[in-house]
Length: 372
Image 1: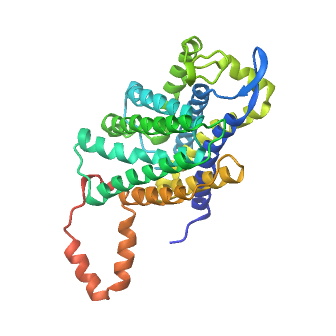
Image 2: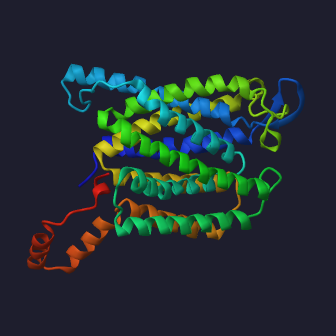
Image 3: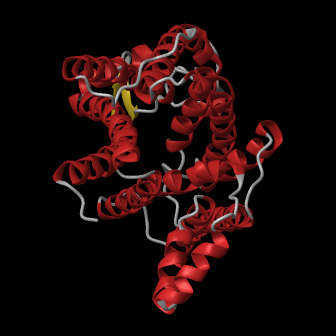
């Protein structure tokens, strides 16, 4: 079935904005500028302030939700279903997880390459699968367990590529190892967030854009307030600002004033996360969740290719192997192998054999979580 122009637009929007989201954050990290006290130029390493900007982008998804709702009312469109009453505080625990995981990932992005950052985020499959079995009582299909094992193998290969790659003064080996570990730790928190959302939030039939917007509001408000104590908390070697504190928002604003391109990078990060969420949700609705997964994998390729082209990182052949193993793990976990196998089997069977196959499989039952 051919895609419509609107579906092609949504797929392109998801791929482009998703790539911009990671690349703009890394672009901001690469800038150097003087801070408030003048003196020596230093890198723009303000992960918590960048996380605040990301939540601002998520918060803006509420505006998109209400615009869709107004259009649906005018056109009597059923794309935005009637919302059940719910307490916004349901989103507080997932928002706290989102805030913690996002902050850790922005800290890690300062330490490692953009491509490794994107690839290692695939670890979320491992922890989501294990937590869904432990806390949601789900049964994973054998292919999903294979997907988890393949993902673990892919993470090991990507980690080896980082260890064997050349390291500059900005990304020392110890920093790269720490960054990679922080990314994997963040995926544990992201998996907890997903389990909390499924257990307590999804049963209320909340529109995804509204859910993202409310979580963005909580994350934006709470993390903005936390910037005040972070200004005074010493962070030692983890600090990227001259004062050696956990976060120095004033230093960040001074650097932005002295290097306006940092503001452009931050604006790209904020706006891209909003459009990426909207496009991702629309792709799932208009096309399929499998298409969304494929586009997300293509996003990794785009980020990797552009990082190499811009000279932000050195090429290592092991990254190719690691990426394909991770891609295979993601495909197995999400059931992408089923339609491929079905197409192959259809090509090998005669029409009579296909009818017998349909009758034999007509009463088969899929694992509980295959519909997700």
